[in-house]
Structures are given as C-alpha cells and as structure tokens.
Amino acid sequence: MTDSQKGLNAKDVTTCGALVKALNESVKRNLADGILLSGGLDTSVLAYLASKQVRFKAFTAALQNAPAPDIEYSTLMANRLGLMHFVHSFDEDELYDAIRVTVKATDSFDPMEIRNSVTVYIGLKNARENGVNTVMTGDGCDELFAGYSFLHGLEREQLILELQKLWSVMRFSSTELAKVLGIEVKRPYLDPEFKKFSMELDPNLKVRSERGQIWGKWILRKAFENMLPEEIIWRAKVPIESGSGTSRLPSFFNSIISDIEFNEKRIKYLDEDKVTIRDKEQLFYYEVYRSAVGAPHPTDSKGKVCPCCNSNMPVTSTYCRKCGAYPV
Image (cartoon, rainbow, N blue to C red):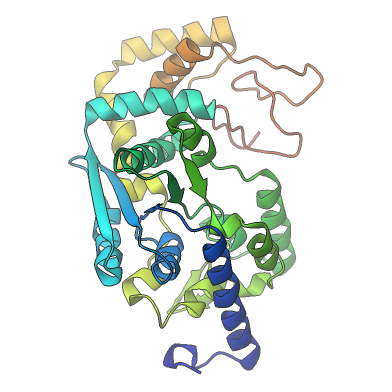
C-alpha cells in the first residue's frame, strides 16, 4: 500500500489497482501522435500513462489576453513528463474563423457548446499543423466518473439514474471537428472495455468527500494520487471555457453588439424562424448557423420539439443541444 492509499479500505485499494490497470490497457489500445492537454485530471492521467509507451506531442489552446489556467497546469504536466508542448494563443481573427467552422460542424448555436468547442477545434487544428494525425482526448471521463458538480450531493439511487441519463446522451464535438480537419481522435475513457469497467464501478467511489469538500472522479484521483503532482490530482473540475479563457466571450459580444441591434434581431428571428434568442453571444452564433445551415425546423413532426428553437430533440432529454435551452 502506498502512502497515498493509507486510510483506504482493502477493497478500495484493490479497485484503485484494477482501475490503473484497465486504463493503462485502454491507453495502449488508443495511442496517438498527440494529446489535447488541459492540465486537468482527465488528460493528465492519459498523458502520464501514454508517456510510458510512446513519444508524442502535447497541445494546449487558449484565448489571447484572457485568464487561462490551463496553460499553467498543462505546462506543469508537460515539463514533468518531458513532453514536446505546443501552447497556442489564438486571437480574435482566428476565433471568428473557428466559430464559423465549429457552429457548422457541431450543428449547434448553443453558447456553452460553442465556447468549449472552439478551443477543441483550434487545439486539433494546431496539432494537424504540427504533423499530428491522431490526437488523444479526455472525452467521457466526467460522464463516466461523475465529474460534474450537479451530480455531487445526490443520494446513491438518484446518482445512478443521473449517470445513466448522461451515458445515454453523451456526445463529443471532437468527433465532428476532427472529421473537418481530416484527423482522428482517440478516446481511452470511451474505449468499449474501459467504458464497461467504469460504468460498473460503485457510484459511491466516484463521488466522495475529502479535504473538506465533495469531489467527483474521487476513485480516479485516489488511483493516481502517488503518480501525478498534487496540484493536478486535486485540481477542481473546470469547463474548457474557463480553462482556456473563452468564458470571456459573453462580455465580448455584449460589447460589440448594441442593444438596439440585439432587440431588433431577436424580434425578427422569433417572428420569422420561431427561434428565441437569449443573449448577444447566442445571436452571433445563430446568425452564423442561419447562414451556414439555415433556420432550424423539426424533421419529425410527431417527435419532441424544442420550444426555443423549433428543432427536434430526444424525447428523454431535458437539454437542447441545438440552442442550449434547459430545462425543456
């Protein structure tokens, strides 16, 4: 038993060992030329395991002149592992180009989706420009190991139900974005064997209190606690937009779109397209979407239709991937 595993019962220690072994085997099956490295727990664990198997390049993308903690944490991990690390700061022009590609590729004008996905797209593009054809991502870890804060504090049965809902609808923009770029993404967490292993873990191992707070992905943190820097293991979950600085985009669009323009266009699109525009950022994305794809409309008149954007959505879903409406 390592120092980090003191205080764990024998069953938890065994589970930690099985988890490390299962994920290591999954990484071996999904090795890539590069990795999108945020410096969060998910990608840092993958980088650690992959670095023992093959040489690869690490890529981190962040908005220029914006707070982007991913740079600090990813640099820490890259230096620790001796990786060739490419940190790419993108400017306003590159951001606009990325938004156009991302909106069309993801078939979405949901601000949260776009803020997160533009960083993924730019990271993947930077990888391709540096000779990388396969890129590893941390997709699926938060869904499988209850990384999201809305899952914390739930009773066991409710947590099980919420995780099962997540698993039934989880989708990742890296799939579509990689296709646009002509490269391939590798996802060790979503490898069929590891995915099955993760789903069968006791949910009480995924959410647990330690150090005076509740943590998601608890068992993953404990399994790798003696292998990665403490700052990485106990780094709080932050969305891509917060780590890369694109969380500044709402205030940016508020500054470049006037109230008069916003109100006029909001009325116009509600009247003409039956689309409810919530804010200026969404207005910008919707106009890109409308130009590239067209106004949304239901393809199944008998199916569930989002009241905010007039498009179909899964019957069991309460979140519209097209416009971001929630709850629906």
